[in-house]
Length: 282
Length: 282
Image 1 (cartoon, rainbow over the protein chains, first blue to last red):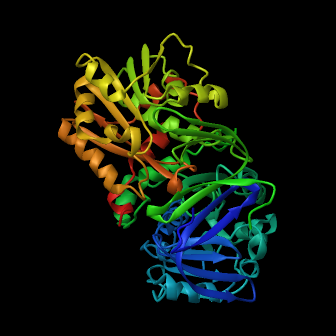
Image 2: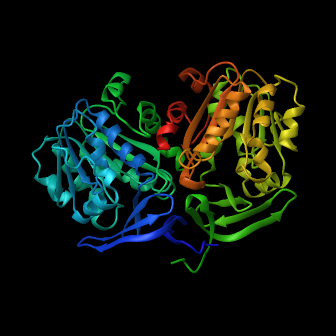
Image 3: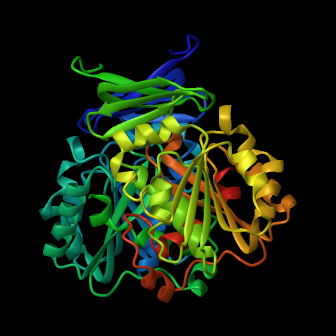
């Protein structure tokens, strides 16, 4: 049944009995770094595809969903986000969305593996368009250690744009790291973490939420959104606020921000906040 | 790389270079009917899986998304839906959701292939729970002919719950059928059609919308929602109204309806309506 003229790249997600596959035309890169193995494929219909340790990270065609939904709800949940920190996010797509907000004065990206960014510059240049923005600071360092080094209360928004909770990213899903994020945030500070599939990973989401509550955050919310290249095609981000609430932006604020988004808008934000995790899991 | 203890069922969506696969434990049914070939598999993690002519129709685990989003936005867009018509929908999941609305006095389901319903009763009994509701009328007949036979203005909501626009369902995507729906609807009448993926099938959605406008409908809207078992995991329904608008329900009306949904609610409805098709397609 496979067409003879193309190969397939497949991610087998055995623990949930499902797989997604793409037809690929060429294998553009294969690099074994100090942290992981990175592959880039040219697909027939989805642009380029980046894979880390066998798990799909992004495709050119659909990454806008994830990057917009990880960034804009969090930034709009803070009254005036000026200092933003990204942990992970080496493809720079999240950085690009953060810098679309004019209020942001500085955005530091702490990616452990420099090769992720070097390959993104080459194969996903559209995501790296704002890497030269004077407000952007790209560090290649350990996110866990970086958070500990920060002045308490020195950050407005922390975005955890990590790989899955195995391998190098495992510590980013632990209670210690969440406590360090809490300490680094100022009053009204927001933390947001990519939190896998609302359909498949409810235990993980419950764990993230528990860590956030125990660290002292006032309120948490999990937002659902479509993300075709990840298992189930339905993904989530979990947010927490240090003092305050997690309301979507007013119409006036959203309009003033003049974002050019493809998926995110105020109403999508309202809908994403209404994800009823307990019912989905039934 | 495939586990030895299980087989895989795969839907290869060649024209978009993507495939989805499930691990299956047994092949429960294989029937060649007058209209199509129907298969049912028992999967390892997604309950039962129904496939028609090689295309996935539903799984036990995730069909609630599709059925809720095809039904509730349409019914809430009508001021007082009493007479509902489903074209297709043989698995009875849409019928079940329609009958959750107390205002509905009669719901007729016109499925061309009786075997779809017989297999659903056997392998998806939870979707057929309301088939014996005195308000339900199950016909096994040609939807195109049925619409033509109706008294003008005799229906409040028409739901087109069809297979893909090839094979037996092709006519359900044509302009003639949409005109017949328009004639069958009363003032304020609503038509809704499953309209494939917002990411992959923009031309199809544009065609459906054009047909609706040309038939005389006042307003149209395409709603996006996650649907893991279909290509891209992101699906849509396109609605049209005969005289009037397509507003989500008021909080009071939504609360009064006392629906037990797993995905749909008022805010999800608002978010789904905000799908920006033109931007997604870029």
